[in-house]
Length: 354
Image (cartoon, rainbow, N blue to C red; front, top):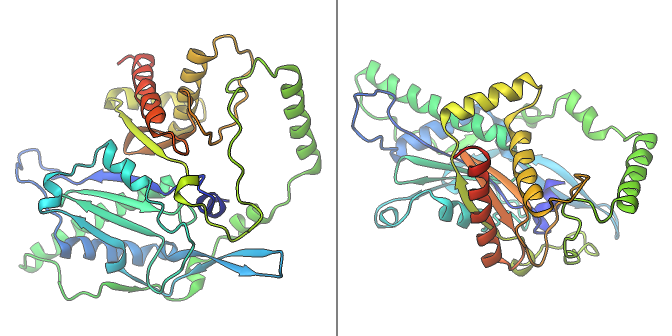
């Protein structure tokens, strides 16, 4: 699904960013992520998680059918997936909404090409302290994005502690930047996950959902949230190998909405008390905020997010990147999306008490 969404220009890459700093409160020296430290830590993370070598391969079954297979690279060349933004570039660059927006709109790996040693992810190191992990959704999800940063931090700390014990001051610069992933069996999906992927849906369940869909659309057509969306552009579904061009891809506009640590702790505690997590909570808060503001007379909350040619203030895509980030997507509607995003940020801050 994520592979197809990416090729058709519906869903771009996933980004998870973090800033690395000293844990010592009395240490005023700025942390500097050197080339050696970055590559050494990244080597350790990739060696521990060979799943980072996953790529998608399209195989032609016959003239009308194409099958997508998950494959694994036998090795990862770290030079191919690390980008440093520093020097004169860094003087004018911060990891802000504009930078994340730019990365999210670049559509890496959309053509589905697979090159030896080059994974479907990369890290961008900005100013030697900020690290942005950018990846194709086929490889992993946002939760693993957080895991990646935790493991990367642990590897940095381990590398810093080892030289101190050995009386040296730097990681080994001669360490290979090519990570051998070994046997494909290391990245084999668990049997439980395999069963879930190949499990056929219940016929009764499909019929029930279809009937409920028709019921709501027939009896509550004028009382639904987001019911008046303009029709989306037709997708190029006639060619299974088609790749959407720049004009047909969704455009992301990003604004940040920072939630304080105290509020975050309270929200997470409330989510756990109700058997849920922060991610669906954010989705409900954002959708509910916009729905109640722009559809005050709606009686049924049935939504269907889809890309539109214009975007009056309606959310089409939600992206979570370190702090809460709200991203609006629409083909060619950059100005309207930017205004909608800023409007939503203000509304969310009012809803959450600042």
